[in-house]
Length: 252
Image (tube, rainbow, N blue to C red; front, side, top):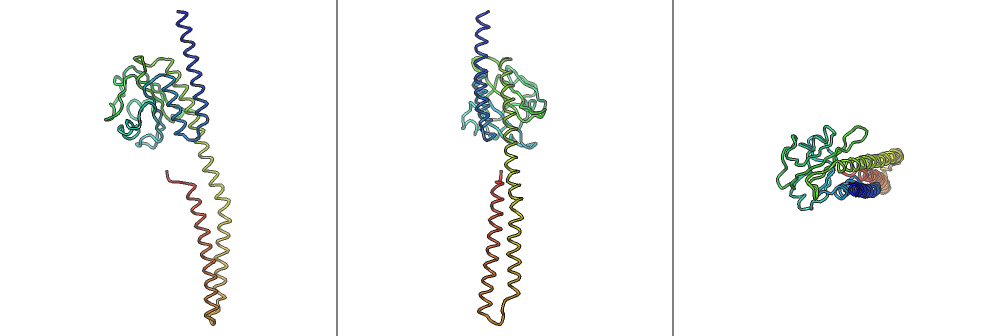
């Protein structure tokens, strides 16, 4: 009995160390997808499952906006089709914010079947990813390795990883929003200058139009060329500014 408890304590300490290392790696991620992938990989390794996945919901009725898996090949993912819609058992995690741990997912009351070509699940462990009471995603694992079902310790580890995922997701969202606001602020500061320069050029061109010497065709042609050059520069200046603003907001 003593040896068993000692072994369990050692295993738990080892898993906590792996979780700690995973948290450090996640903290260094710069994109949400990168952070989620590190969480999924760590969950599968620390808890011991054939497959792990983590997703962040998109708009209602759409597949997950962010979704990564660990333990499934790229070909298998492609055959499975689009990311989950957040229904069935996953819907329980996302709607109710409760943990689901079962020996056979097919026996869960919310199970609605798996899509064609989807990897098969038996044992299942899923936890919601929550931040300040808001459910912002789900982390789940399937097919416990060498055992018939996931344990209470596995559930605790999954909840810890979900907490790290929540912090990472919200932090990266904040940084993304901060970058967008910085671009908006920079453009707001630049816009008046651009507007003044363009307006001054247009105003100057308008004044020059009134000075054209229509009695001297040659001089008039030179004056028109000068006005045209001023207008062309103003248009190019404005176009360059608009392109710069557009590049700051690439289509998603």
